[in-house]
Amino acid sequence: MKKLLNLSLGLGLLLGITTFGTSCNKKGDWNCKCTVNGNEETYTIHDKKRKDAEAECNKNGSVLGVDYSCKIKYL
Image (cartoon, rainbow, N blue to C red; front, side, top):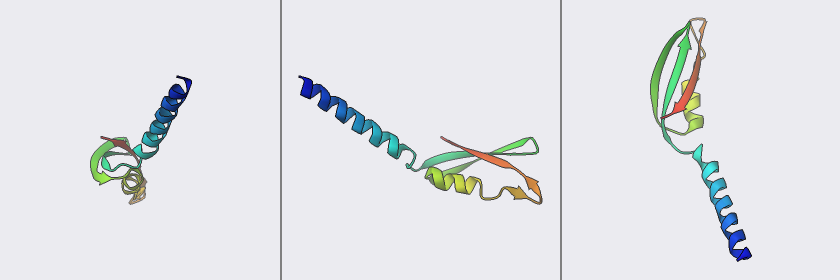
């Protein structure tokens, strides 16, 4: 009984780590929300991993000398 419990806990832990570790690497759609001088604009980035979507969302941090900030959110 004790071995079965340990095996179940071990498999559950392994499944949890595997799921958590790959969840940020999945492709999907992302909202990119940018703020410039108090004005917000949101657009969608399709079928990208988080890292690639962040790079696309933040590819320009300044336009004509005006700085802006952008954040992404998984849809």
